[in-house]
Image (spheres, rainbow, N blue to C red):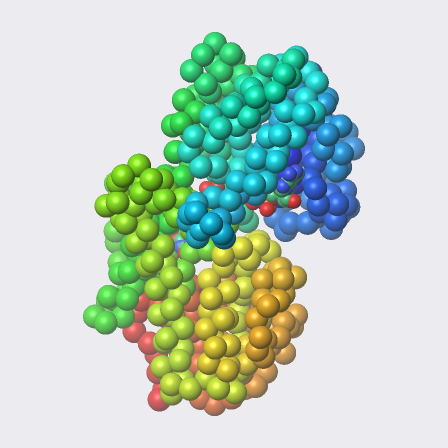
Length: 456
Ligand code: UDX
Ligand code: ADP
């Protein structure tokens, strides 16, 4: 029986530890965080993150072998295995600003571990996505004191996607574990592998070097994002040539070498990982003297920003080149469906651009209004957050769908149309709605990557 600890009770740490606790009942799993309010919510039924199926898993284990609290030092003292899942946002200042990862939270955690560990052997597991060679830096910090603990650093990046975290954790494509190239490192990697082997078939548990593991995580995210930017770039060409991006995506996705997933055109990808990880990958290539490679990956982010801007320009252009005083209702603010997470959502720059034109922006989202308010707290302009979608659309000149929530397919668009200003416009940033039906109701419909359906 081991004491497993996770430092950082966020989108990655919370769900992952709940899944380990559920599948490894003989171990005790503790999750700590500096954020007291977050921990209080983990101890309630109003969890700090919305994730389908998460509450059920937490309820099965909480108080039995899953515990949440804020005594970080005390928890480290008792821990045999420490997962580090604190945030590593893009650096906003100094060298590498806007590209490199800000490592201050992570370094503080390394020092907390060094200072407070008491067990003779402790395995430290990098869970959050970290720059390549972080494990080496962490090992150097951990070896710097006179601690009697012997530390091993293991890289075990998390591949779960928000909105499907529980199924991704329950049935992962693979679990990646990178260990140091020595006897101690191999032993530590095997110990971590044994945890996952409680529920993941052994052939899906990959043991690699630490560096390969760290880099694979960045590259997986970069390759996924690259597919979206590729499709989004072609969506622009489709709009000029009367091809249909949905048909093109389907046709290329049926090639088994390409595969059908992640070919959905959108207003732009968001989330806490893609942009951050690609910028970091690009920074790394620059650092190692590979400017061509750096530029190749940076272009994935450039196309993404361009796609969001293109969506905005289309709204501006179609609404007769003036948005001043017009009401635009945003359907969705989360970066994708089934999450309340708004980090790096394309809704943020879209909203800023609309407000920049003096539009009145009404935001609706079934789960993300609380985070949307936080994201936009410094934005000066006419922005409101509306819980009822019909109220949000009342009197609006245009609807802009940003997030593909299922419920947006079920709305009474006749009723919405009647309450909107004429001519009524709908810009579908996800190709999520029934465009022919909307056109029949009387909307001017602007999908992505296909011809618009216009009455005027
Ligand atoms: C991603 C990775 O998928 C996951 O493996 C990693 O651990 C964390 O980063 P996440 O950001 O939670 O997960 O969501 P994901 O489903 O990958 O979507 C990212 C963004 O891409 C969303 O904004 C989504 O709407 C967008 N997207 C996705 C598209 O625009 N088109 C697609 O075809 C797929
Ligand atoms: P992710 O999506 O990677 O899980 P989050 O931002 O959701 O990122 O979660 C990271 C968590 O780490 C936050 O709840 C934050 O309060 C916590 N955190 C940051 N620094 C520390 C620290 N030094 N000790 C403990 N928790 C920390």
